[in-house]
Amino acid sequence: MAALRAKREEIAAQVALELGLGELGGLSPADRDLVDRQADETIAGCATPATEPADCSDADRTMRRLLSEHRALAELKADEADTRLAEEGEVFAPENDA
Image 1 (tube, rainbow, N blue to C red):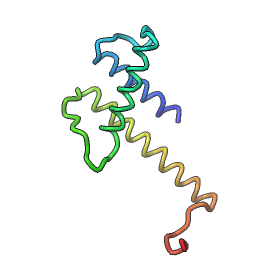
Image 2: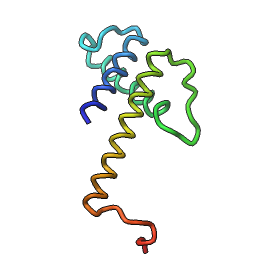
Image 3: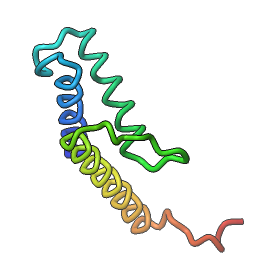
Image 4: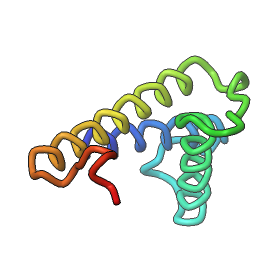
């Protein structure tokens, strides 16, 4: 979880640079809110499979790498959660669903 949050902060830092706002630590609260919203939109639109994938071709190489790493961490987290649930007996085969 901490790794996923850290990767999101890296993406936010890249967004701030792309917007010409500078380093995250020096942002006003309003600018930080803007960066956070843009980072969330970027992650949602480019980092996860969607029915209509966003065109992320305008993202630079650094942003594409960060989004790819974020997606891998998110998938790893989901896999770990599924494993934990299976170990606790919370995951059932489809034939057990009635």
